[in-house]
Image 1 (spheres, helix red, strand yellow):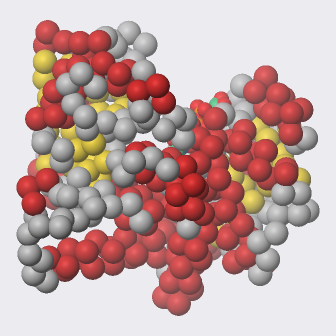
Image 2 (cartoon, protein in one colour; image 1 turned 180 degrees about the vertical axis):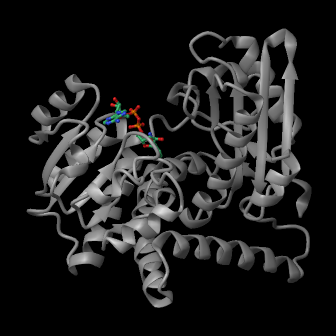
Length: 368
Ligand code: NAI
């Protein structure tokens, strides 16, 4: 597919190619939708096999950020930065400063931070070139690791799912299978066990799952067997694409709700789960805690506010489940409908005259 055809299909506005041979930088800034405010999205560094793969990833990820922000109540749009390079080999001060200059050249239309392949320290250098950054190390004014916030959002989301399925969100005696015991998964396990759930954990890094199980009182399951584990909730907290043709028939749960991004191999797997009577919490809704945290940095970071806003993931999921029920559609379709509704509502506000001065909390570049 040509780039313009791909942008038309996804509804993207802009794709900026950034090239600085001296710095060894080849990067893309994808801007999907800025209805809600400047585009906010992390910076992924990945050794893509082809240029087309890098373009496709930047477009897909920026589109996902629009939806995530829209339903997290965040007043930022959807954008993503992709550096085409090997994070283990190609990082340098100059590369990140060059990236910072390109981000700055967009005049605040895009704000970026860490994602797969980049870490908060990388952006300390970029800070010399632009203020349009989030997720810096706390010593440089950032809010620090977001995994605790993400885990909290997933926890309240699981409660909302249990309430939908059983009429009671209490975790006491409920069985949860957590796939992945990394930064988010391990913190989710802690919260679940504290709430009285029986937790099974799996990780391809066996030492990690053993350590988490011992520390919090969970049971270790083989990573390949986690899909067959009889449970109330299957919580994917590792990789994307784990809900697919091979795994859906194996699941023995009533709910799929976890932190991993892009859990569904394809959108049609939302219907496949529904057909099996399994409630799916759309991943970009339930895992929005990290985004809520970094977006809050732009308003002057306040941890209590972040946790309060993350707790709103519960009511948001309940609203999605209600729309899905009322319209006989999947929870994914219901979430997409609610994204479109928020964007259309905010876009229509521009038809109401607002005089200049006493501007909004989140001024839009260009003053639109
Ligand atoms: P992490 O890298 O700390 O942990 C991932 C864990 O999954 C690792 O322990 C890894 O060994 C394990 N793993 C990988 N493949 C596996 C498999 N096939 N079976 C079982 N375990 C496997 O990553 P983190 O930060 O905990 O994130 C987890 C997921 O949540 C990712 O998909 C991430 O994109 C997503 N996410 C994370 C956020 C955050 O605030 N850290 C925010 C939103 C989404």
